[in-house]
Length: 288
Image 1 (cartoon, one colour):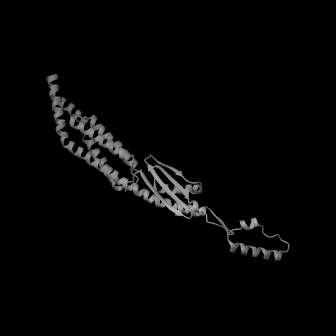
Image 2 (tube, rainbow, N blue to C red):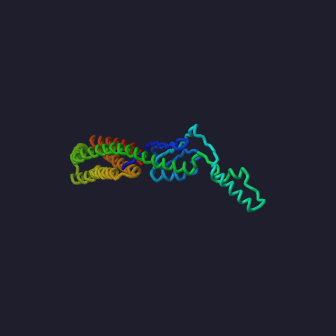
Image 3 (spheres, rainbow, N blue to C red):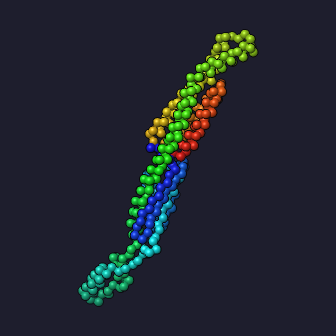
């Protein structure tokens, strides 16, 4: 599948006392430029979140924003765990009885004892797991949206390829007649200007000139490059850089076709090819 570098996804998860929301958006870029917007509670897992994103996205200027909205009615509360506290007091009393004059546990020590105080506040590790799960879901939606956009780009590119192939197919059969007409025109002008001319020498010069203005090779390379573009689009995957390189090669051949042109038809073909190539290049800038 061809993936666009433009995408968006948003998701959220409820937890006791609040709501965690996560949003991913991206635009085209030469490489992966990842910006994270995280609350302080989740800063500790930023490397992990970056790793998850990098495994799914290779290019694009991407922003991942995570927010935590606390519910006012669910403010953190503390209460005693009566069962743990009572058992701790009993054990402390037994120790004092056996150890004689040993000091008992203070109130502060009792409150700090693990399990004595209960809170409804979500544990940090639970919140972190919730965030990573939320990101995994968002990345699936994000890549799905990029895939849909990529398919649209693919259709646009295939239309331009078909247009270029049509231009090449139309101009190629006309080349012999164009070349012959041009040579005949040059020969007539030379005869008028110089009078008697050595026919053999004239034929040699014309043969050399014909080689210089022959564009059959350029048209063949254009067809080869277009076939490669089709192959890459069909294969999918990370193809933006390869397609951009092929646009350079296509533009080189179209320019050469124009520079060798000896007729308005080949000149017009070169111009039309370059217009289509530029349209393709603009679309390819959005492909991963």
